[in-house]
Image (tube, rainbow, N blue to C red; front, side, top):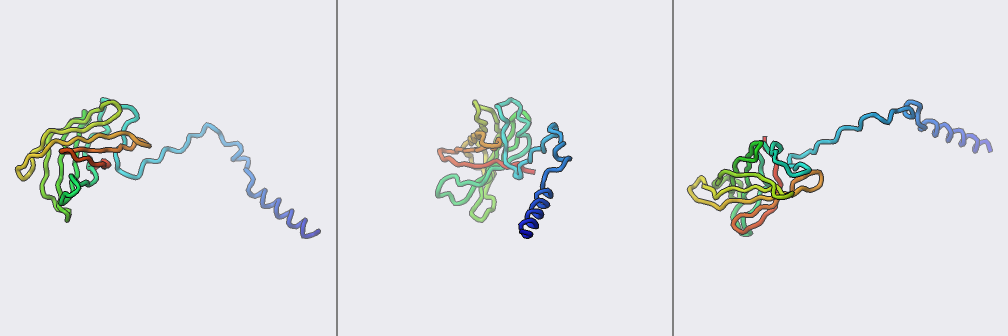
Length: 167
C-alpha cells in the first residue's frame, strides 16, 4: 500500500511539473503570429493574380539545363533578364557534354500574362558563331506557394524547367 501512495505522489509531482503556468494561461491571443518563412531556394514565384507590374521579374534568371531534342550532343539553358515592365532579353547558352559553352544565341524578349499563364517569348536569335536560331517560348503557371512551373518549346521540341534568380 505504501508503494501505491509513493507512486501516486510521484505521479502528482510529475503532472504538476508539466501543467500550464499562469503566465502561459494569461498569454494574450492578440500576439502576432511568427513571420512566414522565406523559401530556401531561388526559384521564381509568381504573384497570386496576373499583373502588369513585372517588378517581381526584374533582374536576371536562369533555367535548368535541358536537351533541345532527345539525341542532342549537349545541353542548353536560357538566361533571361528583364526590367520592371517585362522587357528584356533571352539568351540560349549551348553547352557540350563536358559543360563548356559552344555558342550563345540571344535576342530581345517580352514577358506578359496570357490569362493566368506567364509567357516569355523572343524573336529569332543571332548566335555568337554566326548561326541564326528560332525564337523561344517559355510558359509558366503558378503552383503551390506561388512556385512557377515552366515549360518551353523551340523548333517543335518541348521541355520543362524552373527559373532560378541570378545574382
